[in-house]
Length: 166
Image (tube, rainbow, N blue to C red; front, side):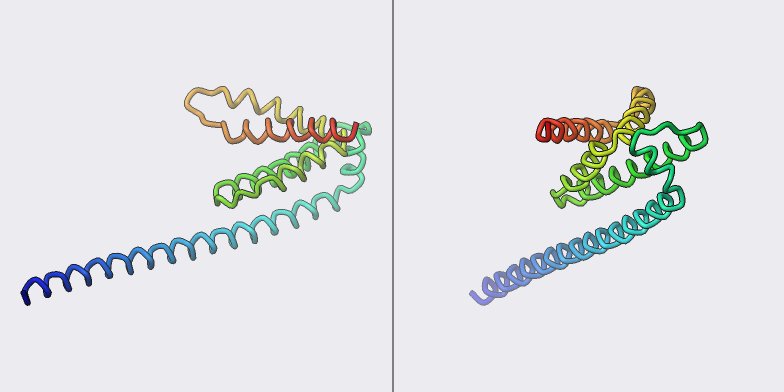
């Protein structure tokens, strides 16, 4: 009998050790995830501040381009880079939230689509850029589905906003 009790006790201790190690691993993964989210947030904030600085440095081009006014070739090149930066920032925010499994990716999509809806020049430039890069997404062996999903979602959200306000 005593040997059976010792065996049961040893098994119980082993199971408790396994459970404790799984809890530890779970806590460690949560801590690493929280740290990654914090780092991504800081990086995103830094990028947004840099983007704002670029806009301020080129405020006349930014406001004229957003309004859909005529830009000379140099201004158009600067404006395109500003729009591409805004697009990349929104996409990276959306993608990071999606990868982190936070579930609330809608605000990045909503904000960017709303911006494009309110600024016809930005919408025109973004669509032109999206159309240009879409040809690269046809390369064999490349997976650009996430980018395509984002652009489709932006277009759909712009359509929804347009229908709601018209």
